[in-house]
Amino acid sequence: MAKAVAVVSALCFLALASLAHAQEAFTVKGQVYCDPCRVEFQTSLSKSIEGAEVELQCRVRENGTVTVSQKATTDAIGNYELSVQGDHEEEICEVVSVSSPSQECNVPFGENKARVLLTQNNGVQGTDRYANALGYKTAEANPDCKAVLQEMGYIPDEDQI
Ligand SMILES: *[C@@H]1O[C@H](CO)[C@@H](O)[C@H](O)[C@H]1NC(C)=O
Image (cartoon, rainbow, N blue to C red; front, side, top):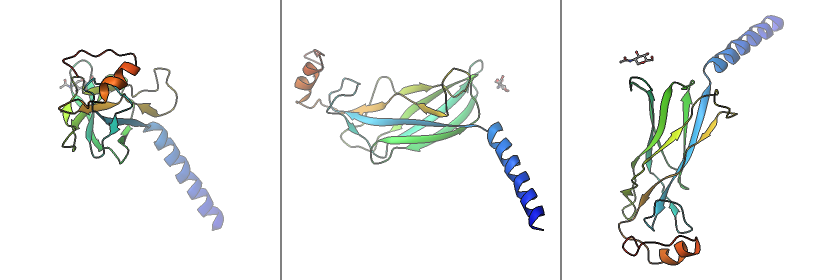
């Protein structure tokens, strides 16, 4: 009896293992930040945004059919994670900013999406995929930005700051 149970559980394990292999999953990770300098890149004054919504979308390259559409919300330190089933080599996958819950930091960036390659056939090992950070800016630049940007070697336009 014990032997039969052992055989059955071994078979179950094998079945699950092959299923897991066929249905490989990628973990897409990224973050959403607040840019108080309105330059659309990260500086030492950037802050994470908690509760920002993002959406991962994959579309078939030739006909635009949406194959994946999944939302996620950032945690207390501005990070999100999405688990996506399958290989999406023939699709264009992007994480798009959807919303910021922050009253003072909710002006969308001009570039509000980040490409991710969800396939094992492009030389990237493992199943974690990191998306470029997405962000929102404030309506007005923080006065401390000028010094920070100059220190970074970035000379801002007078009317941008
Ligand atoms: C789009 O292309 C995919 C993959 O070739 C196919 O499965 C799907 O049916 C197509 N959709 C439309 C609306 O043509």
